[in-house]
Amino acid sequence: MRPVALATFALALAAPALPSADVPKAIALLEVAAPMLPGQVPEGAPLRFVLMEGGQVFVGGTAGVAVGQLTSSEQKALEKRLTDVRKLSGLSSTVALGGGARRQHLVVRKGRPLDIIVTGDSAGAPPPLKPLTALLDDLASFDHPSLRPWRPETYALRAREGKLPGGCRPWPFEDTLAGTDFAPRIVPAAQAAYWPTGAAPASVCQGGKTWIVTLRPLLPGEAP
Image (cartoon, rainbow, N blue to C red):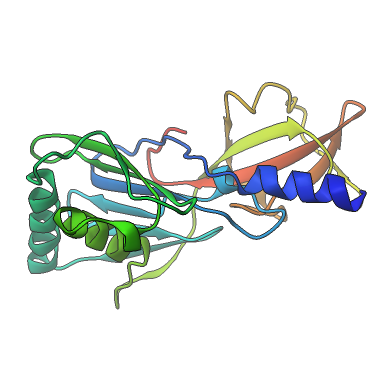
């Protein structure tokens, strides 16, 4: 691939996007889209943070997912911060913080629902929004002693026509890849074995065409 074409392709993959996922019994979900390394696909990355009703948490990176368990007091403290953010005056469904390509989608279901998209870097937030940006920063970089690697049972397969540098691997399954760009297909973990997952795409040959394929880890019950 020529340098200009490769640069254009990398720029397209770096454009922030949010997968708009849904996880049953989740109290709060955070999706983060930000420029990634050249060749990575943001839409393939798992959810960044999910808090479940029983205090279980899922934390996603560019490919893998970790699972942990908050104590009752930790969960209450986090839920209080979510409630405090909901009470911020003048908060709308979209908040622009200024420069930067970062885009975050926070959904809070407990109590009065909150669904907000925040664009820009938190450093540019005005003082009244500091509780919101501080919460987003903490959730986006969440860490906890209980976190352990988690193995998903299903993945969301998405494919679009295109080429990556190098060759392509034949797709060994019967289902066609066509149409999954707009309607991702849920596939079992066994079908994702030995393939790149998360934001790392695979170059696949099927039906005389070349596809860029991502396999996004899905949380329990998650619908892509």
